[in-house]
Image: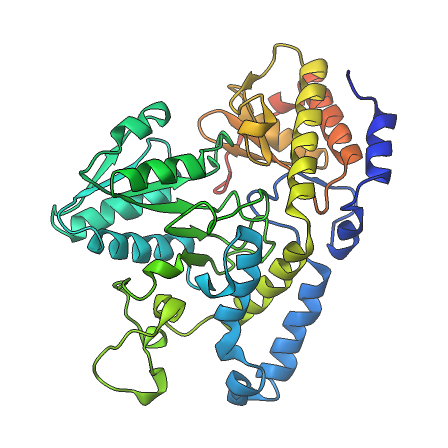
Length: 411
């Protein structure tokens, strides 16, 4: 049965996650449907960064590596994220960027499978995942090959040639979900390892990496974890692999005794060896605040609400704009992440006109309008109003205005 605006308000009144909204600095007059690209600023982050800048850096200076435990931030933030992704505290560490972490873990994984030369992924995976693997193959001079198989052929493509299966659990453009436990089990059955990109999963889906047997994973800190633009990323390595993994960026922070300053590299035990250079304290401090909020939430409630928000948006858009959009995401909310993706040949201009009307989504070439749903701060009423705004944009053809046709550098 179709919901009404009053039904949406009733759902918000009964929402078990409603209290989280007040912990974010939401701009007036804006409905934000782009948390799958950049999360909203947590209110606590402003005060935390002021403390780090003014007191820890400004007053205590270099002493803060010890007195404020700057040196422990990568592991401390990693332990918070571990709670969100279903891992033990000593299986996750925060460091570097997603791209750098992909390189580190993929290079380490193929070394664990000597004699195998295939890294298997899918066409249309997030570009950096494919680019980094192409670069790794070039660096290794043909000893590794990136092979792509369509989604419905991945299980068959997992053969005894495959060293590593690299996939993004939630597709960045379509929101389609991969079967992480099933594909991990299939990879293990042929002796391959898995590396999952959780950039659109962590903080949006209930994850159980340890239970599901994942070998390695990476993810970014600036989407659902609300760590801020360019926030540090994270790495997961199952405990069973940690002491055999040798990642190639053997920087001083990954050394067993970094302040011994010896010439020869000796990797640290556990996740410490995944570090490379000096950690960025401002970014980690901001990420700690965002991850701490996310770690408090019941991920089952988060998932249930995200599915409901997506379904409501899709229902209203199809009622208000019949036949005007294609559907790029799965219709079944159980098969998609926390986003809805529509298609239209004028998609970029439509998104710009919608942003001008106070509803922020984003666009992915060539024709995808992408709307993300972050349950901690988004209400059912917001989603209803966003669909109404999209209906007005289409009914009045506002997107045809010349100002909305000009492509910005970032879409």
